[in-house]
Amino acid sequence: MCVQSSEWSRFIRETHKALAHIVKAGSLDTSGVLPTQADYDALIRGLGEDLKTLTSKYAAGQISANDWAVGLDQLMLDAHTKSWKMGRNLAGNFADETELDTLMGIAAKDVDGDRLLDFLKQIESGDARYFLEDGTVNTQGILNRANMYLDRSRGTLNEAFIEKSDGGSLFTWTLGGVEEHCPDCPEIAAMGALPKDELITTPGSCQTRCLTNCLCFLVRQDGVKGFELAGLDNGSDQAA
Image 1 (cartoon, rainbow, N blue to C red):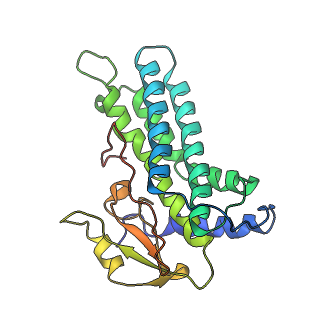
Image 2: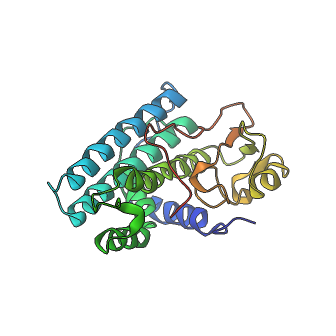
């Protein structure tokens, strides 16, 4: 089934339930305008541009690899925090950003902490994937992988979407616009409309074999649609 099972989704949901008991989430505000795919695209595009700038500074020798990784860690935090808030907005909760949003962003971001550390070690060791034959930095090679850490925020958005929807909500995993899918997505889609507790993962959570490149999306029974993959200008690949 899923390459990383459903552990990430379960962790995010259990973290939210635990924090919701001890952190003030803000008053429920159901009056607002639902965020759009364009809003999410703009968020990821902006973070992608910041990542390009950060990586260019490393390539030019203006910052160290460690400073670059610290910068990426902050971009990941921004991506997950803002995606969590956008996801609950999509669910119909329009309260201002709260401490709970930030803590959920930290929790989601930190799941990839060990992978980011491995990434940094590979760069510092001169891994051939991230350097050209003449020894200069392969900026695109670094961006290809780093973008995946930002793309995973769509999984966080989807988790907030289902967690903050009404308890009786049902969600349908809808296949994205490609002719050939990974083995996992059609299997999940075939399950039909599911309550959140039976939805083992969400599109973009990097738990299906298409990883963060998943083109699928969720649809709630009232027709509200989750977001599809945002298109980053500098691309992404399958290596993690």
